[in-house]
Image (cartoon, rainbow, N blue to C red; front, top):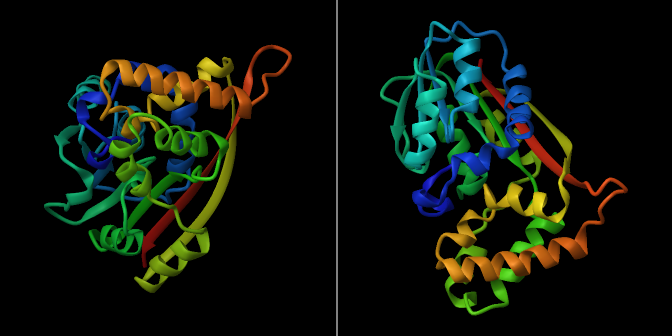
Amino acid sequence: MTVGPRGAASGWNPALYLKFEQERTRAARDLLAGVPALAARRVVDLGCGPGNSAALLAERFPEAELTGVDFSEPMLAEARRRAPSARFVNQDIANWSPDAPADLVFANAALHFLPAHHELLPRLFATLGVGGCLAVQMPITLHEASHTAMRLVAADGPWATRLAPIVRAQPVVAEFETYYEWLSEAGAAVEVWTTTYVHALDGVDGVVDWFAGSGLRPFLDPLDEAEREAFLARYREAIAQSYAPRHDGKILLPYPRLFIVARQR
């Protein structure tokens, strides 16, 4: 959920992220439902965020040694409250490696912020013990109007020069066939699928709040308070032009996600 390249750790707000806890946790539940039966002793939650996924893992694998890894101390503080039986580590998941082979590496809505997936996912798969499982969920939203607007606003304002590296660094999630090839070539038994969730949010402000707690963070963190307000005002205008409210004032936000479950044979 939160990793170093997504911006300064101080920018992550657990309360804002968890304003949409039900919607965000649904994808974690669906990913966990795709994990086969495991006699798991070591479980790692990469990019654990505020602990909503860690709580699910603790319930599914109550006897396992559960470790959550995240870059944001405010998120970790909330995670420790939600899953007190787990161990939590403040670390950039881009540099994570286990002390011992894991039975399950679970990465819900985290790896899409990291580059070089052709190296990253096979490397994570290689950390598994015999019969272990790598479970990954990533939003595939780069070309959604919500994310196009982020890049357009970033490129058109007094912050353009500072935000240009962030725009260029936005990682691209590959096609599902590509992940299948990378992981099957690494020896995995692979399942991949996609799901498009449709979230009914409270108008333009609801959409902006959704992304202010997640995808907008890399753009907002380098800005001062006045610039953030100006950036969000422009982003709000772009969202109003891209999404029409329904009769009840709700905006239906399509949110496609890619799921990957790779198991050691």
